Amino acid sequence: MINRRRAIGTALGIATTAIASRSAFAKADAVDFSDPKIRLSSIMKMRGATDDRLCIGYVTGMRYAVVDGVATPMFGMLAATFSRGQKVADDTYESRSFEIAYFTDLATGKLVESWTNPLTNKTVAVPQTRSLMGKVAIKADGLLPINSPMMAAMDFGHQFRQPILIGKDVSITEEIRIRNKAGSPAPRFRYNENTTYTAPRIDLMNQTIATVRTAISYQSLIGFSPWMGMDGVDGLNMGRGTGHRVSAVKELPPYFLELTNKYHADVLNDPIAAIEGKLEKKPG
Image 1 (spheres, rainbow, N blue to C red):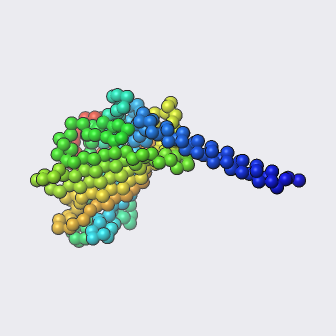
Image 2: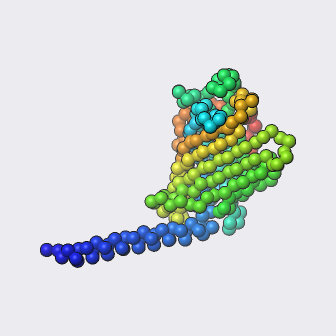
Image 3: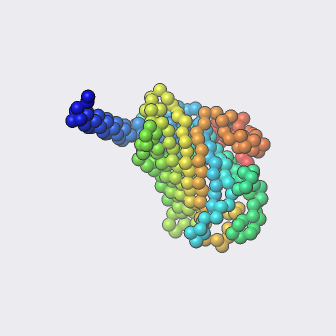
């Protein structure tokens, strides 16, 4: 028969050991991710890779018009980004990317080519967007545009928030804040974006792995685009979406591939040329 006092003592011992183990694990994680080199490699594995391979990620979600504190659904969005980076110093990577985005019907999920604005009742043509992004320098605490005349005319803010450890996963949030410089004669410009990347800690800490499968959560609050027909409407365009990093073009959402094969096959045929700015320019 088990002695009650001995049983209680054993249980307390087990609990104390478990607490100590969890504490030690938490301290080890905190030490790991306070190291700028480990943070930078983790960021690169989540956003792209620590080598120069082609990297691909997608997001699917919705956009809303926010006016007087009310969010009105406008349309769905389906976007993918192709990127490539390289290490240029112990504390710096350089990266370029190319993005394709489609707007979709809220009911059917199919491509929208004309859209009736629910706030103004105007029917407008809906563009597709394909954009070559400028080169950026990525460090453990944030990134900076390289030789970008457009960004030189803006107040540009960027940072990577401290990693958050949840169970076996790590999440890192990237924040972008862009505004016109004070006194700028250009039309008012506001851009706010938060993107959270989540991946297994064990993969991020594995130095033999250059990239990891990553879950993506996206939120944005930006000004209305001119094509939306929002003249005279004081509000903002809110976006939200989720997605993943994938290892090959064929793993992108089937409808994205269908649309891109139809409208932007040159990008699928040679994503690297798109990233390097070697494709013929198209509107959008």
